[in-house]
Image 1 (tube, rainbow, N blue to C red):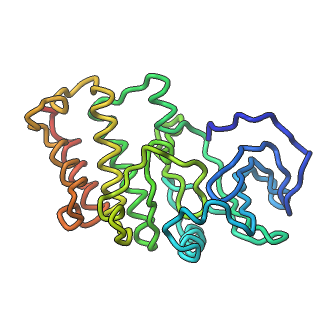
Image 2: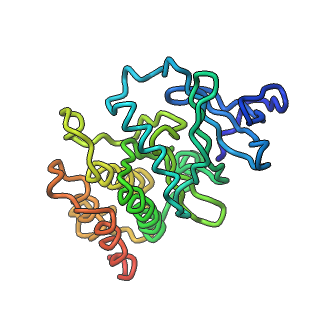
Image 3: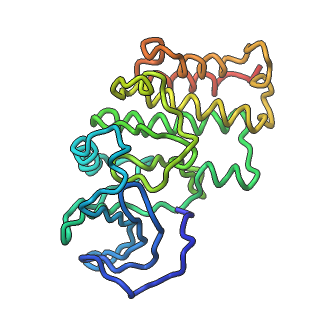
Length: 258
């Protein structure tokens, strides 16, 4: 990940079997580090969550559910999801170690002036939804999917980060579905709402470079209809699954832009 900005402090601190290479700073519930797993000689993102669990007072998802979902990541092997290496206790703190993915977040790409065209937007959406489909099949919800949770590797592979206790940053642009604001439990349709909101924001904020149908105020571009359904205020009107929404986007990829 390209969020390594603090000075390297290699060798200055060991946390259990991990040798700290760099302090990445505060993260939700704790602190994140770039670390070397000395048992396997592999680099990992290490999140250290103290017993006090700072920030839990503002978290609406019970700790037990977040812990269970984090552990469930170890059952998933998918190129669009970072591998979870382990969850363990160390001197009262919880250690969560997961794969370091080389790439840039969508937030970083946009800050550097990158603007997706229509085909790129659809491709990103399909890749995000494919990763979500794998996670949802294991009972995992994302809950805060936004620009900082989506990484794009140099090869163009989209990787969805931040499930469970692996979240590294608070993303103020992550869309909260209406039902969650009303206190209802999060569902897979809430994640689809976040995907639709993200893609729509990317489309309009960037003024797509080509396939200008997305810019038409009358909404004739079928892409707008897909995103409108995904962001319906009624979760029952949204797509039934990430796979169904991905299929709707895939059909658009095969058709010429209006």
